[in-house]
Length: 323
Image 1 (spheres, rainbow, N blue to C red):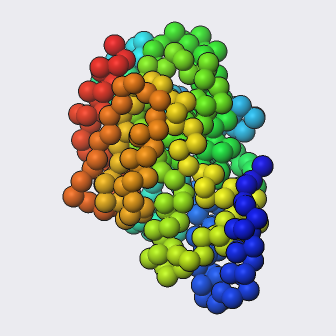
Image 2: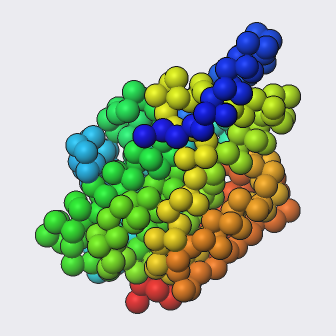
């Protein structure tokens, strides 16, 4: 059940009566971030020389069809598997901001996840990667809304069940690469079904974020920071969750495996490194590391592309925990 305290509800109603049409359009635009734009599959494993791969369709735990790729390790499948998921509004290929509008309205840059699969397969890992519901080519659900983990955890569960029932993948050592909205979803999945993830060796967790931090930063840039309650009201009217419910803070304590968290320290999308630090502090893992990407403010260009450009830290983490 969506929780919006009575006092916030009443404040939102008052804001609705007094807000200008221009500012109201900005508020509605911010809420619409949770109705994700679909990114196209602009690249496949073939583009980076991985010519042995399979298209799959995996059922989410609630039946939503998830389009996926299975890419075996270089030289043929090994006994190690990385399950890789993505951020909003991306897909398993990455993000096509370089192709222009509408994607460039987020950021006009290419985010290439396929080169990241290349790093993994070259290092001896099989990769299973998938489009989360309402993204890429996967099925629609929940009115097209994203819950930033509140619904999408079911996709993480469905994919892990698929792995556990597969005649070959079920025998593999499993690690996770779960980022941003996909990371929030993974935390929630572990919270909901801890027994399903007990055998996972480790997780790389880039760019997990609370929507309240994003809304605070972007509303300030647009001059409507005083309307947080009204943003929540618009989210509820769209069939979604309020910002305070869309956060990894609620589920981080359930994560007990070794974690490498990666964040852009001066991220212009949040302007709040304390949000990432709090998520890290709440993790239940005994072995965890927080790596800050510094000397940039660009979440898309430098955050999501970090592994593609600098694979050493991520590969070193997996090597330590997957062997």
